[in-house]
Amino acid sequence: MIIVDLARDDGGIVRAGVIGSCRVYAPLRSLVERGKAKSRYFTPGVFSYSIGEAEQELAYSRGLRAVPDRYAPLLLNRASAAELPDRLPGLIEGCEVFVIEISAMDHFACAGLCFNDLTVANGFVRGSGPGVLAWFRQLSSTPSPSPVLEAALQSMLASGKTPDALTEEVLALMTRVRTTPRSLAEGVARIVSDRGKRWIFTPLFDLSDRLEERDPARSALREALEAAAAQAGVEVFDPTPFVARAGRAAALDGDGADAYHYSADFLPVIGDALRTVMTGTKAP
Image (cartoon, rainbow, N blue to C red; front, side, top):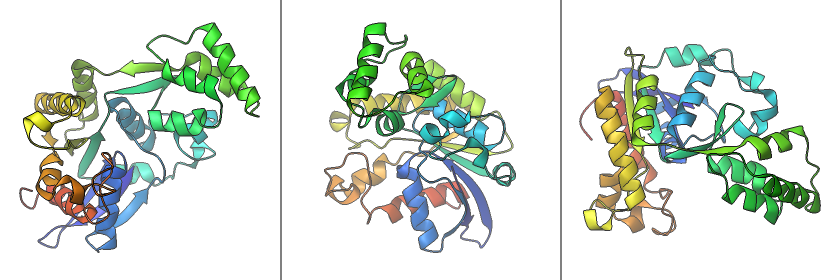
């Protein structure tokens, strides 16, 4: 979660809350660095990709949903879930507009919590051996079978790790949740139930705005999100046209080789576009 005060062209201020990944956080930081926004709150290292994670983060940040301390290092990148600042719920209620990035149609679930693949891969799988990697790759809508669990535990031991109660809980209970267009629409509707705020959803950018060059998975996500937003009567900001106009080599990191991250020089472009949309000063 990031909360910023954005300067309007007319001199006014708009407070905005943003949930997502570095694809929205880094452009906003560029606004702060250039004096076009003032940071009010920033949660480092905590990213959200799916609708389930967005709902979870918004509820947690508002103080409406608890996260057990044992999951705080994996989910919140902090030692204790109790470290939520007392001022955060008030800051959120003071936001006029929210931007929610949805860049994945699925997530992982365990103990009633939502996790993304990067969180699980980096915080749990990495360094735990091939058995845990195999467990990760076979995760589905049902709990993992006993032979897979046993192989994962042995893999951790062989990698020099000592499985604890949390480890066994994650291995035994974690499942993959597939988001459908219908469940996405239901999630969007729940998030935007507070009609006193403006809600803007943004998908993962596509690599081209030409139909024949689009990524099928990204196109499907964007179309589902646009349909869900239309049904809920809220807005969508699609960064794809900005990427297409600049060209992949200029817009994306590694001279276009990185299909998931903006280049440093392109961050101000997306930052300014987000500011324009969030402040409602003019159409991007």
